Image 1 (tube, helix red, strand yellow):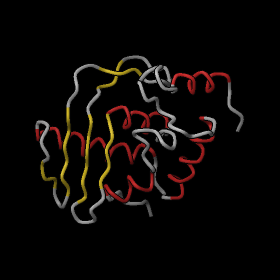
Image 2 (cartoon, rainbow, N blue to C red):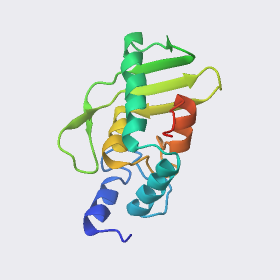
Image 3 (cartoon, one colour):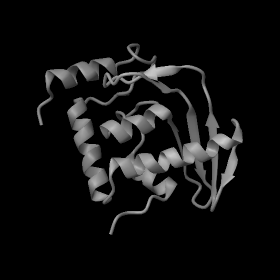
Image 4 (cartoon, rainbow, N blue to C red):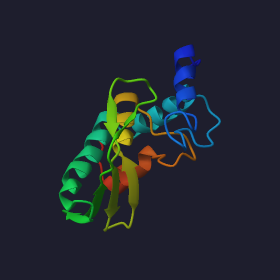
Length: 155
């Protein structure tokens, strides 16, 4: 699919120094539409939805908040840490309002896998199907999220 002028503007918003110091595209040379399409294809192949993935990430975030910045055990075999940062960040997709800046780490103690993400990551995935560009500080490969968080596929 060809990238629209609106998507070009959003991609400009994602460059380093516009919303964040590091931006959201990393060293990815693809257009935003190509990044979205490829990750969407992966999620479909996994027989999941972006909402299902975001829901699981949100669940770990919400449950981990009880640790007040320290790792806490989440059954059956996860350690979760939520570090709260004051303030908010705007979404480069030009959504209204600010999104919290909490940082979440989930360790799967059974597999040794670990992922790090933010509240903005959850928003990106739920609302936009965006996992960030390759080389981005918080790039999340959909397959890796599913593996570490043990998200069950639909039948």
